[in-house]
Length: 314
Image (cartoon, rainbow, N blue to C red; front, side, top):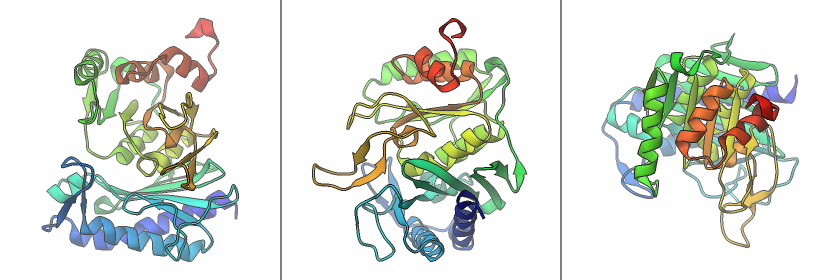
């Protein structure tokens, strides 16, 4: 069995394993703690889902490493932090993507798991337990409950765009709102659903023409980025104050970046899905409009790089 297919199966198995616990916990009262601020919360269900997922992926791949939203650093199966090599398989785990929705009893949240090696995404799974809806991607394509999916190539005026933009952490809120307003007049409709991973699945399946966000983390987008690319779309990431890297697409890799200070070990390789800002789209037109709305410095160049368009076709 090809490595990407085996990893994809392990990701699906781990996500499903967390499902019964999460379904039983959903709509109960939860103990809510705050992380960066009151917009960013964590519950006991996040922690338990993470424990279940980590146990599953380490059982399948004992020598792998993991980065998870509710953990610190790059962990091995013993919970120790160790250096990363290009041969290591690394899991990127969001035990509940859409925690605010989960805690509020709003049924739009999921488990997101991806596997990478040497900066290349190899496999991913996004699972919505309440609907028993499984998306997965490997080297053969992107799938929803085992059926192939593909991105939409409709015109921008015919499409739905999903986003969490503007974020409450954006410095220039007025400029962000102006960008958002331009989309209101050009896309058929916009959606703010509260789960970045699920919005990426909607883009991969063609329900959304595009989705974009700013201020994301690798575990938010890794599985969804691969889904979009394997479904025929493009995932464009940009903006990293740590290393000043330019645009990249989900298959690319570049410099190491660190989760801490000068002595910290590299947590992941620099590429599109580790960048803090992204646009995922099925067409150059949709990508260009979303890049402009999100404040990308050169949407035309980013689209040309992603689709290989010659300058006269921009």
